[in-house]
Image 1 (tube, one colour):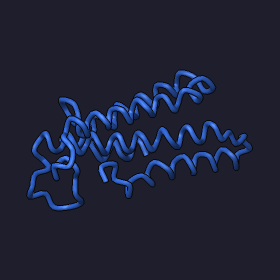
Image 2 (cartoon, rainbow, N blue to C red; image 1 turned 45 degrees about the horizontal axis):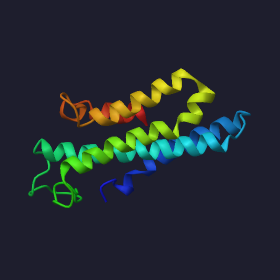
Image 3 (cartoon, rainbow, N blue to C red; image 1 turned 45 degrees about the vertical axis):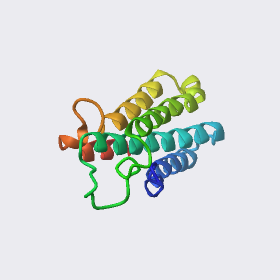
Image 4 (tube, helix red, strand yellow; image 1 turned 90 degrees about the horizontal axis):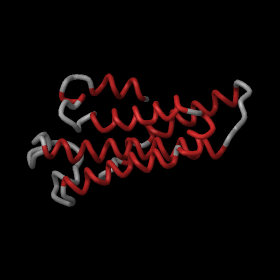
Amino acid sequence: RATRPKTLSAAVVPVLVGSAIARAGGGETQWLLITAALLANLLIQAGTNLVNDACDFDRGADTASRIGPMRVTQAGIFSSRMVHNVGVLCFLLALVFCLPAFLLRGQMLVGLVLLSCFTGYIYTGGPAPLGYHGLGDVAVIAFF
């Protein structure tokens, strides 16, 4: 539940659409890169959801009176520290899964994936979270 499976299609669709566009344009289907991108996107989405769960709880946004889908930290199922750490681990694993693509596609892709992980984290984490300053939706639109 903590990774919010219902939201994970937002990570799958861009990879499938991008792959289809590349194929339609005469590009070669490289299953290793597609699989790596799919796994990395899923991990970035899951990491963002986990960090959001933990940070919203820590900031007091998710209290016992919260209305909406259950959050594992708010419900006391896992500690915010554990949920936060697993979220960060998801970002790190996304980078690992992207290694083949980094080697084949270069530094620009490294920068884009790092920026995606960073933005996923600061959506509600860090000292000035985007979601708490009216920029959360802008980040979501820009990165999906």
